[in-house]
Image (cartoon, rainbow, N blue to C red; front, side, top):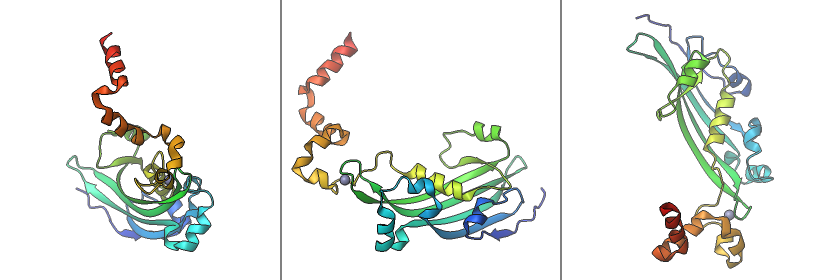
Length: 209
Ligand SMILES: [Zn+2]
């Protein structure tokens, strides 16, 4: 067992520093900070148009991203050392509700763990059903800004919608037309009809033939 020098470096909380972190140096890192959304163009393009200035005025702490990163070394039974990384991200983003097209605040709280592997092949072969951690490619110029942005984008809902009961459109009776394609509204109607739903009969006919 070789004892590797393991000094923990404090990550400088600037975009320039986080764009190029040397994970091959044998050092471990930790750091935390806050970035405004202006650092993340891909996230900016997902949020409610025109909301950035508004949110900044209302609540400055919500117009950005709180992040924490820590890395550590794990000695494996096989005698080599795994390099791991955990990132925690907290933010609240104004998204556009796809029902009423108004903005609403979506809270996002992420904690994700990764193992850094040495080759593309190892990353590709990493089991996708591992729910504890994911694999990333080890690099001497690792882009942590990109990782943070990727994780936030992955955490966004596919179809952003106001939480149940908070959408102005569903409260008003004039929203009927817009609700047609809303499966969560259609589902209870089907179950109310139960066996009498003619479409259930059709489905059965199809299965029998
Ligand atoms: Zn809405």
